[in-house]
Amino acid sequence: MTNTRAAELLSTWETGLAQPPSGRALLLHRVARPDTGGGTPSAEALSALPVGEREADLFTLRRALFGERMQVRLACSACGEDMEFDLDAGELARPTGTSAESSVRVAEDGWEIEFRVPSVADLTAAARHPEPRRALLERCLVSAARHGVDVPADALPEAVQRRLAEAAQEADPGADVTLAINCPECGAATRAELDIASYLWTELDAWARDVLLDVHLLATAYGWSEPEILALSPLRRRYYLELCADV
Ligand SMILES: [Zn+2]
Image (cartoon, rainbow, N blue to C red; front, side, top):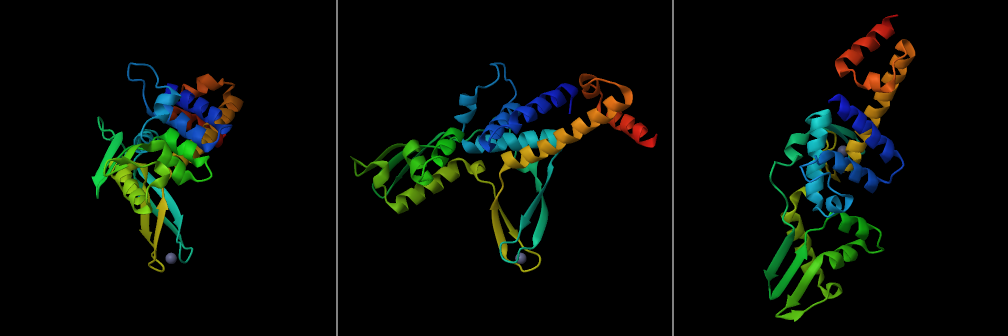
């Protein structure tokens, strides 16, 4: 991690402390998407991306900041056994140049349906609705017709809605990272979704608190300022800390 990166991450962390999970996810996404010449993407532009694209960006950021290996803890849904296992952030990161499809067409059994792949903004808005699933469908449905007759979103049969949910997942497979783990004690399978934004936030929070503690210890011992301490490479910082501890 470069030194300017450390200062940038600390200010991201500080801003995020007062924010709800959706705000923290957006802040992390900002850090994940480097300035590609056209300036830093706006919050609106980032929120309009398909959900899977953001998740993949966050896995890429995670790999860059804290490495490939992610430790995940999960309680068995049957016996409650605490399970710990490793995930590879690289496998879930975004290969360069790829992106999810943004709209999908389903044509079968006389139906002709077109919808947008849900974006972060769609999910956030739908979550505030008393019926999130319906709200999401209404937001993302572009058009639906059966045998040429338009059908409104609230009149789509359950089976058609399920088919659309499948089609959305196929179009944006990174949107749901679902883990299925077999319990070593009882053999039952536990399924859980991995929320990379909150996982990464927790790690950033622990990292930031460690850095502030280092600053505190070195400032106390040597009288250096925060920017001076952050400008040290992690290796040198560690070395000075060891010297302080030896005294
Ligand atoms: Zn179990």
